[in-house]
Image (cartoon, rainbow, N blue to C red; front, top):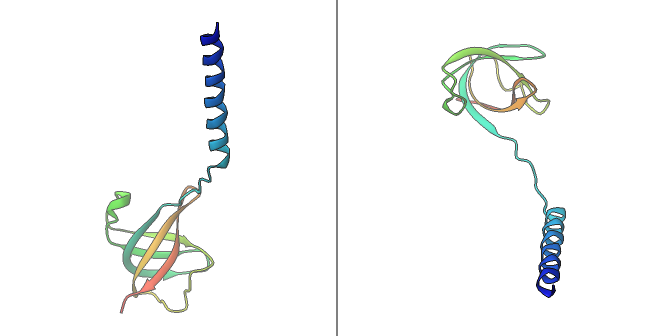
Length: 104
């Protein structure tokens, strides 16, 4: 009987200790980012059209496509025909540019 009671108390202690660990563990989600390089083909208020090199991490071949961009992206330093590097993140069903650097 003592062994059964001891086992029950020990099990309860492990259950409570795992709950307290879960409650105090701070898990921060990490948003994945992908790097690309290409040439700007067009700029408008909602999107940049970029002819980009392959992006192996996304299993994308080289192609030309429009990308939305975050409000933080400075478009004043780029123009059509400009080579750039860019960083992408997921945005809804697609991707958006979160940083853009002109290549000289």
